[in-house]
Image (cartoon, rainbow over all chains, first blue to last red; front, side):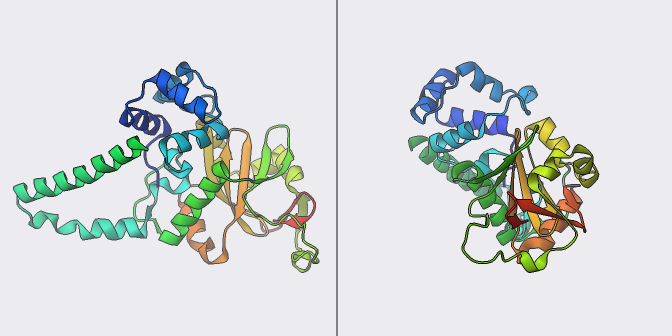
Length: 126
Length: 155
């Protein structure tokens, strides 16, 4: 479930791909939508996030194709602040991290970061 | 939205909500009607009464029945129905919003701009999604109201 606001999510995806605002506008055109780099900049501004600055459904669909993500990853929805039971189970499994030494815990975090970095790189290559 | 501490939903319910949102943006959906303020859509394969069989909702009519268009056009009725439901407030403030609305059946609603999409929630997921929606002031219920989709199928 998406816990990250749209403006932040879209900026993270663009930066992970190494795209400038203009380049992203050009990429979106390949998916049939024409937007200016100024419009994208506005999407990324938290104060602008709202009814008047949210892209249309068609642009959301194009963004999903461009970044290879699903709409539910981009937009916040009703249960974004409600944990699913599978999330709770995962968190419960991590409760014994206090048994680890500082070094072991740091190593665990490194592995987690590597997984996330690898996933971002794969998304960027697509 | 407020952080809900201790509220959890099953993976199945979570997947249903996520899948509904994905279908809204990526799949073909059924346009029901347009009011002065909203476009009403039904998600995916929602029955629109086009089959050759007698309407399966015929024997289940109760309470006041009106079309989606009649309901969403009547601002006082919508205001009354949504008085404890933050859906429209969130939609106007954030551009997207969702809620659970119970008329004859229980539906999940998703709003984007002036579009409101709805999809019936499967019976086995209703209880937990209603509970989670209530906890966030995103639930409304009318014990007497049923809605027609394009005057054909009851919602």
